[in-house]
Amino acid sequence: MRGMLDRIEDGSNAVILLEEYGREIVIPASQLPEGSQVHSWFTITMNEGEVVSIEVDENLAKAKAARAKNLMQRLRSKSGSRFKR
Image (tube, rainbow, N blue to C red; front, side, top):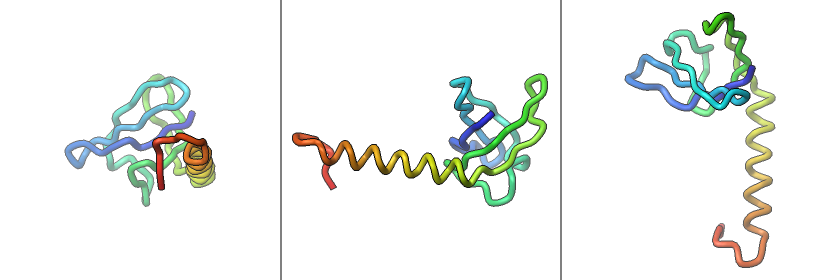
């Protein structure tokens, strides 16, 4: 499954939003892969509600960023848009 690091609470708990399930999980921040930052995307393997493995997915992060940029450009290009550069 895929998830995004939403935030780190109290410096010790990482909140990850699970894309497929529309819910969040909280894990110890110490379980995050090295180099993880807020808005990092992960490939996550779970077994019976426990995180078995978590890996940073750089390709997914780049694809999501490109899609967001494209959507913002489309919004800005519409006439009468209240979103300005």
